[in-house]
Length: 115
Length: 111
Image (tube, rainbow over the protein chains, first blue to last red):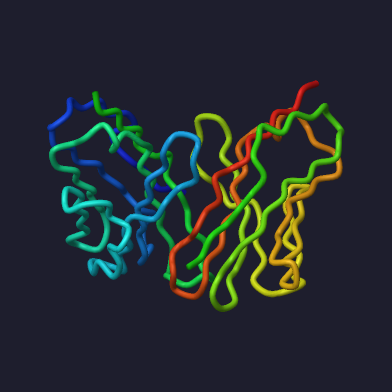
């Protein structure tokens, strides 16, 4: 079956531009997570949805970052007024539930380069 | 807070060598522990997991044992292959918290 998909796979933005990154989770998965992975680092948590509810956004680095999942399926991570330090791979993961009993399935990521 | 520390890479081995990648953790409560693998150009994949002390997770010849007394979850494989070349991430999850990852260890296996 289809896994988690993300688009675009690569995005180059000029500093100050807004970007929108899309995540299509596995059908039926209740939980959706966004992570940021800087070069040479492990993924770091950004935000977590259960259905359409954003239950945890403690990892969002600034108010320029905004995520939504309006119908409890597809999610969009938006970054306003991009800065060079936003350059990273943005990973989306989905799972049947939020506890550690449920495996998180990761998408291939979107590599964002801010020039 | 929760944190994971894993050995820095790259780890360079010849085919059929024994592999150990060290991982230690700090966590509140009783976390579940994971190893994820990222092959070149691909997304993160769960390799194995253990949910309580003394559990051993295993998959594809890899194994790791949850050691509460040493707060460790070292990854081992008896005989690596070239196809095992990838980046390996140790991670933990406590209850409904999110995954906390280590920085990753690159493994390079030469024929």
